[in-house]
Image 1 (cartoon, helix red, strand yellow):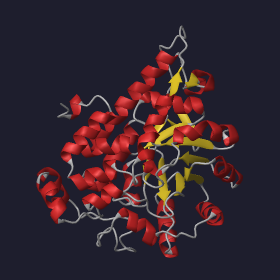
Image 2: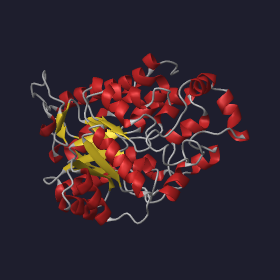
Image 3: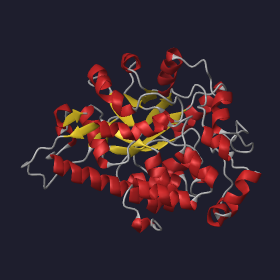
Length: 384
């Protein structure tokens, strides 16, 4: 039985521990996805349709796990994708994840819906940082977010392009999840049954969407579901011209998060993006869509020499990372893989998750006869 961090041997164990420690509405917000959750499951299952073909006798005592993305060297080919509301899952929230990412020499992604201010995060860590940008109807709010990210010296701006409306997240509807959480007859028992989480939530600083609270009551002082938040507040007129204008305003490394088609990947390359994150938002938006891994090879064939391709989503094992890199990704990222760990044990939990995944990547590279990431190629894959 998974009862402590020490007994967690993989990401699924951390998920089990998180489920024990979180009230049901909070856990199912992390764990859930859109509608039948077909795409959510497929994001991980797609790796099972592909086998690795190892080489041997390759002298792998010393290997190099590092990669370069966005012009920054990362000590491992996996980083923490931006995710919202982290202080709901553990009172340290983004502080815990940022410190853990820095300890492992990898990039830390921070959401527009961060629960810690960007300036504080910037002062706290020096590891490469990505700011994930939601495009709001309120143009003053967009300008505010851009200026805060610049002032905090974030290295990358990632515009999320797959949330033009909120996904139909039925688990959230069933549990009554909102941000901030509100007590309902259905949720009261679950909050009462998790006194440690409830006490931490009530006794630490008041939860708020740190960079939005001065502009938007919803999400901080007015409870709202995430689906309604996106559908109500985000600008549905956002298009390629708006993305190009934002890129010009930013003036630094720029990424589109949520690209899934070859056509869109080509347009991203044409507008001068430094990277794309091949992502379906963890299956939380369009159910029935393809998995990122299923799209990597054809996108890499089309634009892999023009920008960095990052597989975002579904990663649960080091072998998943190696398959994505062999298919053409430059690096991988994920959210749930560390959110379960954050909920389970705060910063030590996130460090544990990254340690497990790094060890798996290193071990599997040696078993593959690979000494550096760039040695991975399509010849090492066979699709079922």
